[in-house]
Length: 443
Image: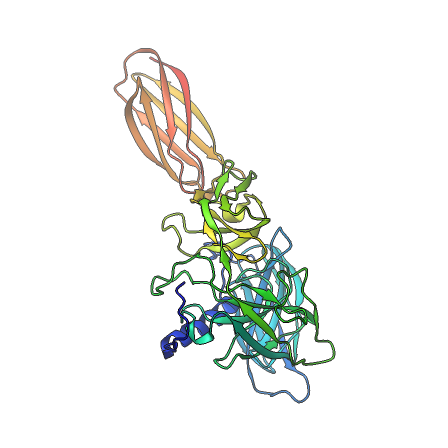
């Protein structure tokens, strides 16, 4: 990000709109998994409002899914509703979810946690809106000015509920810092205690932006602790108690950050097969990082970077059936007091299930018929498709289409006698290829 000192920022309406839309989109439509066409189950109920709140407000009912790491991540199955009305949410995958209703920056319900399994309809998951609580204060700067920041990287204030928040995990609320340094955070239920984080907006993954996605921030992130410059980490921050209502005067002074020099980028080790554990190698930096924050993303295998969505955190990731057929990559962000690090991505790997190939041969007079069966753990037969070919002495004789894990290959004009045939299964984006050889006596 570029930074100028003593200049004035060109706050175009387009840039401000993009920032605000980005904040809302992170809450509304952050997807989990690359493909979510199917429906595992549904959650439904009513939406009501506490006395004193508008009785006819438009409501957004959102849903978060629990990751194996314990984090909750927003999924793209939210729906619009009205106070006094009902909602119904179709959910693509079985798992543990929590549902919440919000009138943004005004009111919200507590979470309702439900388990969803295939074909189950969870009814009576009713939600009641309660007033949000607000946190307000002022951000001062030292060594730079708010006007001198790159318009693509304005200052934000977030209410965090976990020590390693992502753009899509457990950030209770986020707001822009105004030109005069003031801010107001509207914190939804059920959060009675949060840590306030002051940080620069990361460059989004958007080709229209002039900044570089994943680059280190100019401004040093800080957390409110009642001191002038704040605390360097979530663990050292002072919790803000909202159980008694809104709070004010949560002020801080921000400074410029020193940036890491990247020596090597992160990478993934391990074989990306169903049930396997992958490990993130963090890369190396100067100076050395004291810790590294890891985020795992799944996305399209055909168009890399398309629909990438957070599916795990931590240094290791276990390949589950949810990501089979997807591309996988890990982002690693180095952490050290006084420094801001880049959020670099590894190369992509492709998650597949390991196939097993069985072949039966029925010889005939100058001919043979091969019955091919392909299986893969936790993969529906509809996803087992591709090509099967028969070879002899390295020469391909015939290729057929495999559908539903089955195919029959008939060959003719074969020489009499015993010979070795090799059947090769092509595999596909979800399943590995396989080969099997067998001896057949042609009559």
